[in-house]
Every structure is written in structure tokens, then in C-alpha cells.
Length: 128
Image 1 (spheres, helix red, strand yellow):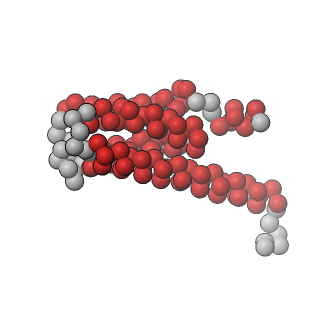
Image 2 (tube, rainbow, N blue to C red):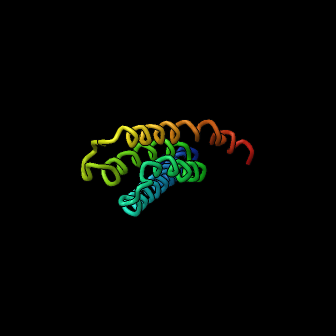
Image 3 (tube, rainbow, N blue to C red):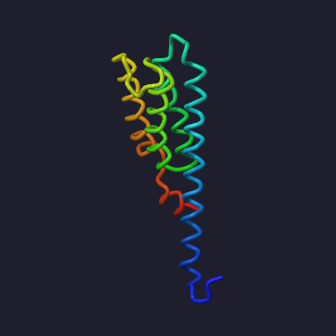
């Protein structure tokens, strides 16, 4: 393919591309789950608690696909919930103070909990 490319450099490029693809799949799964949950629970009276329960989904995806998915997945889910779940619908503005605080706690938990509770990728690689 590349006559002068070093094999070790090519391996690192391939590993980087595979890891990036894995993170992209995790982020797409997180966004799809957020859209599905937002559409299903929009007319429900307990929709204030949806982002707090969604932290469990973020933790599972962060454990499977990496901590970057936990970070960006919680931010993407907050935008999706603000747009599809809370009044006024179709706007990123959230009218209720309790809904805003619920989104804030989801972002904080989705960013902090994977770093605190899940083993780092470097430690996982060392144990293999």
C-alpha cells in the first residue's frame, strides 16, 4: 500500500481509526436513546426525572465505548432533551427551573460519574 510506511506507524493509525469509530457508534447510540426516550416520555408528568434516569444509559455506554462517550453523550442528550422534551418544544430554551436543574444534574453526573466509577482505558489495557 505505502512502500515506505513503517508497520508500527500503520498499526497506530489503524488503532486510532478503530477507536474513533467505536466512540462514534457509542455517541450515536446515546443520541438515538435520548431521542427515543424524549419522544416517549414527552407527554408524561414525570418527564422532569427523565434526565436523571438517563444517567444510567450514559454510564452503560461509557463503560462499553469509553469515557469520551460519557462526556459528549451527556451534552448531546441535554440538547436533545431541551429541544424535544421540555416546554417550549422545538426550542433549546427550558421554561421550568426544575427541568433546567434536572438537565444540569444530568450533565454533571454524566461527565463526573464515568471518571469516578469506571476504570480508565489505560488500566484496562494493562490488565489484558
